Length: 255
Image (cartoon, rainbow, N blue to C red):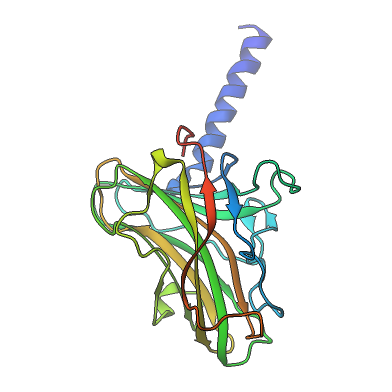
């Protein structure tokens, strides 16, 4: 066998090993470069000080957002989950490519059961027990989903880094179905409200699918999370789901 063929074979084998390693346990880290946003002002304007770090997911290390804990999910039979760095940079803006990242989860149904995944972060040490203004933005799209309320997401606060410590989950996407993949567009939905938070609490964001619809999948995109003090530029009379713009993607892109 020639040296060229041997080198080619080794390259292919190495590529196979890397692929297997990346998908070991069904949890991999990918990047979506086909996503973008068109946001309404002042969607991203929040007050200071911030009590959650890297809530805009601008900073990443080794494929994961800095200061966020993204544990490998325990997979139900046949289910697939991967974590994504989603590029929400809008085309034609002053932002360069990759300057508006978001955190994403892809969930594909298996043969039985449900599947959830999430991330968490402890609030700032300067946060004292009391009420704060919390904003969390999400967009979601799905394919082949048949069961109502199958694609779901929440956030909540617990005493520990374990999501089971959350006593009150707050729904992030209230619709019966999230946006169809073929639409290539979905609202950039913000849940904005006052929340009582304990000193030292952990913020948890959780998402997933409740039913194993055949060959169904959902993508969740999380961005612009903030915890801030009340101030004059917060309208506390509006505690609701607010449409802050749109997210676009290529419906033909692999997930």
